Length: 157
Image (tube, rainbow, N blue to C red):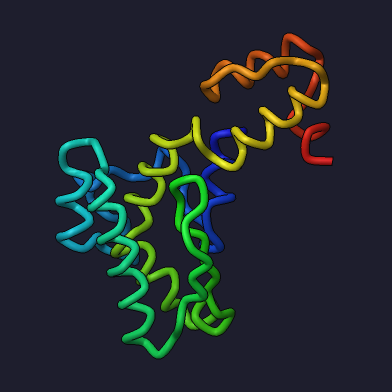
């Protein structure tokens, strides 16, 4: 659950889960095909910073080509923070652009950077407030929550 929350906190668009389709799977009827650039970025199983940035730029450019401007709030904890106009979501252009150009890159990048995520910082702050010295990784932080009888829900209240 915490990994999914970390994935969802990175941006306004809603990414799929870490178990999303691999580029090698055949798309379902009506599914949005990945761009060749996104497929290439995912091919080796590791998303580089340059691939992450290029995917984000392609997504922003795709929406711009459809007449929408992404509200770019910068990068926080290695993740682009942005907002998408409701009209882009309603028209389906956001899903089309995000899925084709950036979605799986974004998910992979956020999972690979979960230890430096907003969620990890929130849990570390919660543990500190409870008098517990937080450890480094998401797995360790989650274990510390459990060991100390704390829940993620308590941390976000």
